[in-house]
Amino acid sequence: MPEVVVRNWPLVDGGWLRVVVALGTVAVGSIAWWQTENVALALASILAVGMSMWRFWLPVVFRIHRRGIDERCLIWRRSVGWRNIQACRMLERGALVRCRPVEQFDGRPLRYIEWHDQREAVIEALNFYCGTAIVTDSRIF
Image (tube, rainbow, N blue to C red; front, side, top):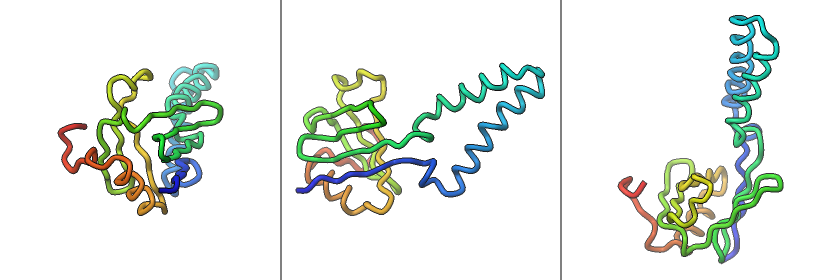
């Protein structure tokens, strides 16, 4: 089974959502400035909202291959082996992957992989590697 590489970058791929999010972020700063007339507070609020939405601004690349799933964003990289994946659930626009507790060192047991135009390739790879870990109900999530 060949590897599948999927890039998730809502800023580029988000369509009208990217405009709404960008305007919303600026609106938070504008409201903070309007209410307090403090430019530093307005900039701090824009920075706080922007940092909390880092996955929107930065590209995240998922690589599904024979050893597991690699997640990479700029210089940060995280790998989860197949034996540490508890379940996968296919959703309308992506796959939700649940890691076992041993892999939750960053506090995020769930990974969402949006497949964009690679739906069939991602589903095929996850079915091949996850096998019986594919679930259809939401009890495990």
